[in-house]
Length: 100
Image 1: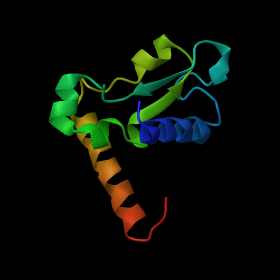
Image 2 (image 1 turned 30 degrees about the vertical axis):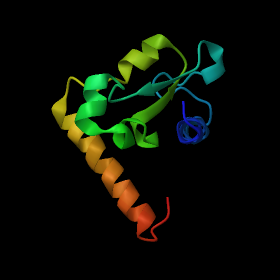
Image 3 (image 1 turned 90 degrees about the vertical axis):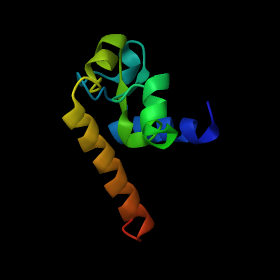
């Protein structure tokens, strides 16, 4: 894992307030994880690129594998495209002086 990936994961935990973004339990109550909404499979990395797959908006802070599984949107192309668009808009704002 790169330093940037670690920073993005820490940022996501901080954004969640250490509360599971699926069930609302404290993240440390079970097995804390960072879920990818678009999985980090080789196929998705080739299709969408590292930038999108490892972006903080593609992460969800979750408490367990069950909640991790609930985050997967790979089966819904509309949701995938919506998330990719959200990431692009986020980055455009960030780099145009709009802040985070």
